Image 1 (spheres, rainbow, N blue to C red):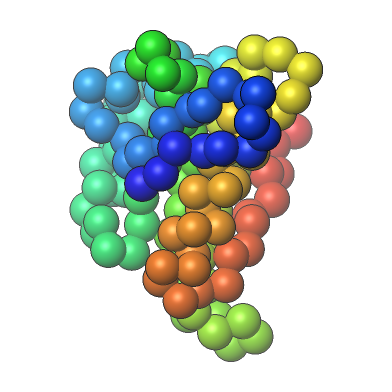
Image 2: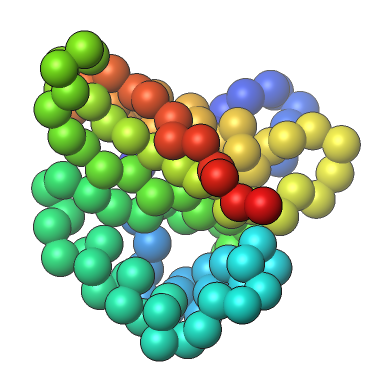
Length: 129
């Protein structure tokens, strides 16, 4: 994975696959997004997403100091209209300023991943109420 470099003066974020050590911080972010999310539901989500690493995953954005700032899930599947497709979403982020740096950093890495996989990148809509 790469470091995001969106603007020369912008702080850099590392975007890498979610690690076991980051899972608790990611859970805290997920609870901010979905307050009713239970710990068992989160563990099942992580287990299911790790079950097929070649076809799905979770990217995590963190500051250079190591603080977790967001994540996004992705999955591959063939699509009749688009061919090989990398679907992604929703973005679960904690932005710490005026610019949407976390979301942009994750999107840059998703674009690079789709390119490496020879897939079209599509975003799933968040249907939360």
